[in-house]
Length: 238
Picture 1: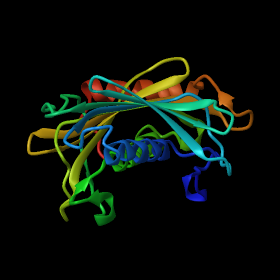
Picture 2: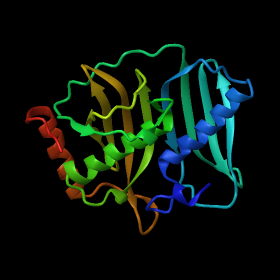
Picture 3: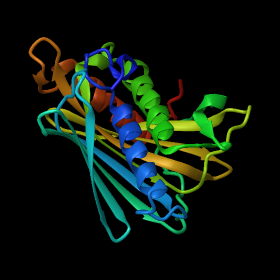
Picture 4: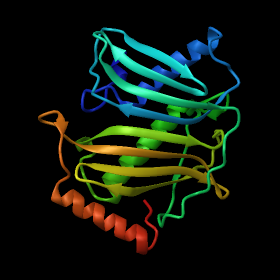
């Protein structure tokens, strides 16, 4: 665990869990316990409880059943903080872009986002994390993205995402919300197809008491307005 793994809430950033799981998965490949010719078709992370910075090592337990690798992330006393489920496939399935009524905005890759010319698993989670923060802070007008924690993120992969100088179109929208959570979707698209699509559940979070909270009236009103615009208004863009 490193200082750079920590977010503004003093929790390990959700992207770092995927880094830990990827490290363990690659170790399985290097040791011959896992085939190296699989592709990641789907990867889902359940965030069970916050993990704080510690000198204790992060531990990964691996359970491979068929084509699904389930990894539980713990530290020190053995408490499980996150569960990463990865479906390994021989070939990926195409993803048609959603017909949701939202516009796209340009997202530029950095050369450091790629390994061997394509974006890796953990970097996809990082890219979609940025998309979620943009939506919460700009599109629906909630000024404090720190008032939410990530409960779950799932990404479906259709094709490798290669580096290029030209930005990729990115779209992000509100799928639905409940008493205390918001479900968002994002996709990276180009030429009429999606490279990947992410679904994330954000949970309202009380920073002072470090626990979940219900959405307040302002947040619910802004979410309702956004959903109405997505259904009937002109496409939103940043």
